[in-house]
Amino acid sequence: MSWKKRDREERGYHHGNLREALIQAARELIKEKGPAGFTFADAARSAGVSAAAPYRHFRDREALLADVAREGFQRFEAMLSTGWAGGKPDALTAFNNVGKAYLAFARAEPAYYAAMFESGLPPDLNADLRAAADRAFGVLRSAADALVALLPAGKRPPALMMSLHVWAMAHGIASLFGRGDAGRRTLPMTAEELLESQMLIYLQGLGFPQKV
Amino acid sequence: MSWKKRDREERGYHHGNLREALIQAARELIKEKGPAGFTFADAARSAGVSAAAPYRHFRDREALLADVAREGFQRFEAMLSTGWAGGKPDALTAFNNVGKAYLAFARAEPAYYAAMFESGLPPDLNADLRAAADRAFGVLRSAADALVALLPAGKRPPALMMSLHVWAMAHGIASLFGRGDAGRRTLPMTAEELLESQMLIYLQGLGFPQKV
DNA sequence: GCGGCGATGTAAACTCCCTTAACATGAGCT
DNA sequence: AGCTCATGTTAAGGGAGTTTACATCGCCGC
Image (tube, rainbow over all chains, first blue to last red; front, side, top):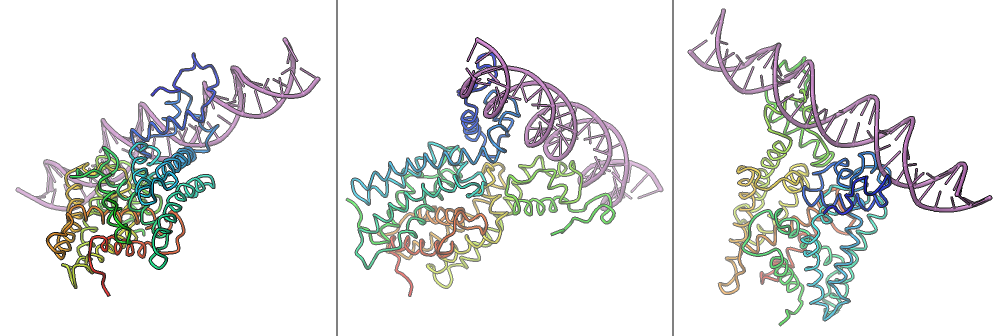
């Protein structure tokens, strides 16, 4: 909670790691009040520095958010990769695990997820942000490639299209039903069950055999 | 554009219809700069009144946004209903048309859509907002009911689940790829094609016969 | 060690916005 | 015609954003 919130008596004139502390503070504040629910000065206060200090590290509030988002995409990519697990134990299972990882990330890191997808940031505000987002999507795309290869040559859907479909499904469910309190309505099933059943139906529609 | 922006010389002391003028102004501003990109004072300025005037009609900026969202859900419901068209010419076609209408609304009314889904408003900030959202979803739900009835009794998926799936697909695609400039990346296909193919695959997975 | 430089943080000043309170206007009713 | 109340304005206090000048300190070469 008060991760680096030591006051000046304790830390001295210089903070030491203000840049990271501001990103942490922003994550806390986003989690509490949404990507639009805090000010640059709030982040500074949370980090225990003056309101002008953040300007040494970020051009403006948007640049801070962009860095939160960039960091988020990196962790997102790692989480999706772990879900895929190199296609083990089999491509179909692994592909479903990527979907689960997507939802798990949105649930476990709502602050990152909000910064990434709900902050209103232009996706290519800077090249690093864009690249991080592309790499994360690349995991999905590679997984789709591997999965498509299981089908007989004549019946293979375009892997790009397929990965976009899955992204849209996962993002739609995460946005609408994914976060505990932001959940848009009470449902007779969990977001995870909803995504799993949706993926099952979708993959069946593509001709993938159902697992036992 | 300058819908009610007549200045005081022209309109006199009282505006006449400030409440609606503020909602219009908010829509313009959301379209230009996103749901977080303008202030209460900006909306007042756009409507040609003093910064304090809006407080006579809305408790705060959030209440204004909520009314934009509520109005949006009403138009959304109307648009989805038109798409469904009472199930004509047949339930499967009509169901696909609901999906198209969903996307068409997101594209034609990005300001309403953003207020409804991307403004960070609590979905049940007030009863009217909640009710309007529920009625809009009800259209999707009814369409799913009608469509499910086409399947043989033993193979009918839960219509609620199905409507949630379709909502998530449409919302996911609209959020990620739906709006012209907010489009998250350039694609070799349109959002409409993406949703249509996704619905096709999904419905095929449920056992619906494909149209000719 | 020590002296200066560059990086990092603070203080202060200016502006703009939010919000409330006191006052002004005029539309509609009787 | 006159009252009344909804609807607007002006003004004032407080907070936040941003810039500028100043303060501190780590580091590096001597």
